[in-house]
Length: 369
Image 1: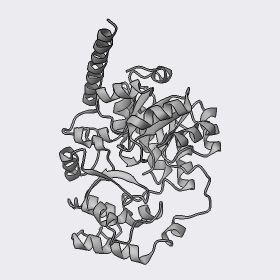
Image 2: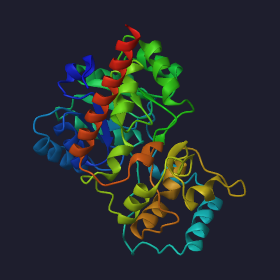
Image 3: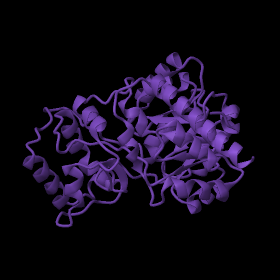
Image 4: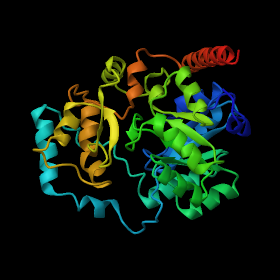
């Protein structure tokens, strides 16, 4: 699974794996792919430095990258308390009522919410970058489009490639014009924040829109056959996230959530604003149903929704409240039917890729006769 981009980065397979787990990121790189650690959950620079130190010690000298969540425009001087004050009391009461309906226990006194994500804030994200650029990362990806111009320049000064996710050809052209090196075409099927266009349509549109920039295909890819299809559409690699959630190296801290993922079918996800305020594909649960109910208060815009539900999500996860328990995941969850190591996933991807290429070659050979 080699392309010009994979050769440039010195990796065996053009498989880029996004994950919040350092052990998974390191295993992806060791298996010949390119591990990308998600940084949004890190609230303190020392926490990120600890995990990057761990990756450095376990990646075997292979390349890896970091994924951040930064708005393109600088937003300075806004504190978390300022944002918290904007949350209406009616929405807070809706959260309390929903948790009480399902008997979700309170956190212990003094116990902090483990899910509270503030990586979208300017000062937090820049603190993450100050740490990251002390390490030999080869790629900086941004989940909210193109990062600020000074961040792109800083990355390029350190020979770090910059990638940005796009859900349309229009977004992709904006990334190209901003100086991005790689565009990730993220289709409707993907887990987390997604647009409205399916991968089969989106990938070739983005490839044509930003040529000759390399494009990675994301969304609905979990087999070697699907990797082959993405490359046939013009992508120079694939960006996989959901597939790693049920690997043995992942650390979900929830056997119940792992069971739900393994049992879910491709129709058991929904694009909902319940988690962050922006449409994000996740397991459909009674929690997402409550927020999507027309009789409810409706979700708040990002970042208000994320702060509003942070403690609630931590409580649901800690006590494994099954009807409410979910996570961002793509439609590919239907293929995630057993716990496997990262290496086993790669073995399956390469075998499927070889079968798909052989099949196409046989068809092409017959048509050429």
